[in-house]
Amino acid sequence: MLILTLLIITVIYFLANLALVVIWLKNPIDSSFLKENIFETLKISVIIPVRNEAENILFLLQDLEKQTYSKHKFEVILADDDSTDDTLKIVQKFQQNTNLNLIINQLPPKTNNTSPKKRAIDSSIKLASGQLITTTDGDCRVGEKWLESIANFQARTGAYLVSCPVTFFKTLRYKDSKTLKSIIVFPNNDSIFTNIQIIEFASLIGSGACAMFIKKPNMCNGANLTYLKSVFYEVSGFAGNENLASGDDEFLMHKIAAKYPEKVRFLKNQDTIVETNAHTNWRSFYNQRKRWASKWQHYNNWQTTALAIFVFLANLVVPSSFGFWFFDFISTKILLLILLLKYSTEFIFLSLIINFLRKKSLTWLIPFVQIIYPLYVVFFGLVAQKQGEYVWKGRKLK
Image 1 (cartoon, helix red, strand yellow):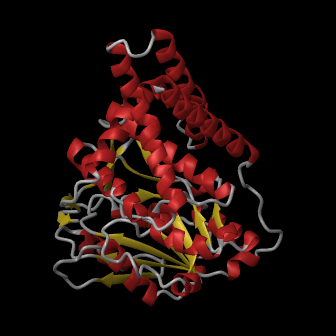
Image 2: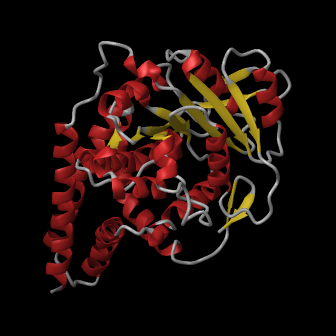
């Protein structure tokens, strides 16, 4: 019975990853554009919630200046959530010399703010004049065709919500606070910790994309998300989960998908890839992953909850199998079969996503990540069940 249970779970996981490979390959990279620039009638409001992003925000603002999308067709709303560093000063200085339509939404201090990011986005949407709302984070970088590609896709498909790819960059960037000059340094370029995060995060981006391809959306990322302002209000925005620190992206997506599953789309286009900083220490990584893992128990969609539980069980099989093998409950052949089923199609899928994200050079590291990933999933799956505080952006949140 024990062996049968382990094999059933692992076979299902094998088939699920095989399905992901097929789905990904069946949906080619989107590179088609409208013959006429109809999409340029769309106005986009780019919302950037920030808190203490003095080291990063200038890079993003400079990226937005370089957009190929018409400057008069998008605005940038930067919501500063009580930053205690020079973020606001840097943005104000940049505002004086830019041709961007840059609006600073300075949020008043608020105590017991359990969901600061939702507050920042919600208040900024009220100021937005665009039909499309595009959100990203203050530590992100975007390509010059980012907005043009998103607007074209939305105009062509009529999507109500468009999720786009996110990954980490390996080069460490920072800004000299005295000269305000952008500086690029490379000590983090070959960090094994950074590279592991790139592969781990790619699995989330890829599986979330495939779920949208089959009209069963389950996850997205607010660092690269676009939706209609009208639909945001139609589904009552963040109402119902405004007291949760995480989920400004996924809970909203689930609301929209519940009414319009065919209107929630993933844009498989390399021009829309957003890159952000990986974590440089275990504590910040721990706090973010704990925050993410804590969301699943609040999902109203039973399918998403069931998927989260299954992924947890499928990864629990690996350490459990080694334990059973060590105590002679299962044979070496069964252990090897379980590992083959677990890792084969998973490796193929991760390789495809890594290649799409322009990180092909990290393919060699995938097997190592596959070995440690089950321990990571089990650890955070258990930690997330314990209610408690964690630190995020200098604040204690629940």
